[in-house]
Image (cartoon, rainbow, N blue to C red; front, side):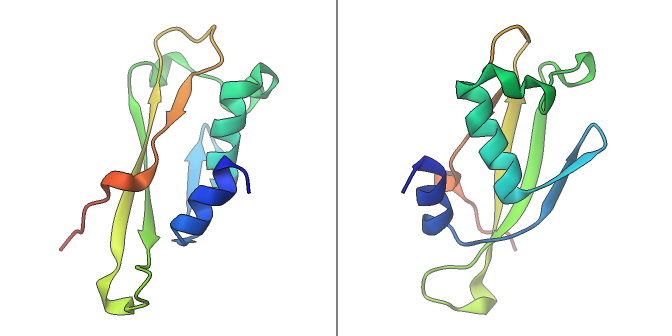
Length: 105
């Protein structure tokens, strides 16, 4: 499995959606675009950094079902995407793996 598939397998997300500049992505699609965006500058058209987003974080909440399968013990996971100040480099958004998930009451 590749890096993305490994992360998806480790954290079985319930698919939510996120909207960037009017374009909607599923969690899987958005994370995949972010990872590919770091290695392929041709994808800049999908996640082009705008002046409005410079220095800000895009937040995305997804549900994580624990491996125990207890549906009453779900975690809300916050994925952070930080927009760099220099949009000429391909690493405009950086993906943080959800290792530091916090349980919300």
